[in-house]
Length: 369
Image (cartoon, rainbow, N blue to C red; front, side, top):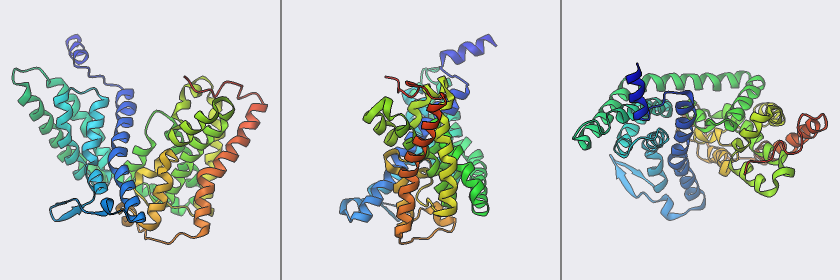
């Protein structure tokens, strides 16, 4: 046993919830952001503003033409796998081999491709790390083993993982349609919490394929946390904090939440209000790429996702019965209220109450320098 522990330590293989559930998942979201999400944004900008070089097909693969944004989205599996390998501190030969593994796994995983990539990339990366530099022909052995193990694992487990993730996501979306109030509260609160925790709400929404009303509730929860914390902590962090949390991430508040968990209550209560308002009153649907459901106001990706879903629904949304529509003034008002106005006003009001009763004290929300 001691020899095994020594080997794992020498190979920097750390089997822990933090390494796999936080580091790897967070990195996967970044890989997804830099491929699928950026590709979607580029395609949307090109289409809506009639920008020629963004709408032109730059390459044809198997008879299918791809724009610049299309190529970025096409490589999302590879981007996620490499990002996961980077988070696991894989050596270069292993890291580069994960390009093939990620592409194959995402393709085999179907709608649940991102979740399959998470599991398979971890397996391939750790096996690759274990074999790396153990032979005199490392330049051959490491990539061969990493690719064979990764693609083999993808072939075996990616389809069922993808199917299970897709089925669970479908269950959430159908339940939200049947019980929009209660599920609006539940989805909004849980996804908002996930956004602020050191895990990835974007990856979770992408894995589950959340679109429609469930996606709208997820957007509401994320905005409640991001805009909420930005406004709630304005007296401590001023304009820098407003921008870094409101357009960046509310995860910056985690060290303060650990010290005083009650500072989270205003944002959580706000998400419990805006979630059902989004699903029951405004009928806010997020039919862009599912990753946008977990982005909130980060780079305004949540709002771009809603807009994209209105004019050009994603494949995932189309599969769930979505259709292109011309947004009305009511739709725009709902998006603005749910994304910006209500999170700011409600969180400020809840925060004022908690400050008065002493649950939130001066300095509790000051961001670490």
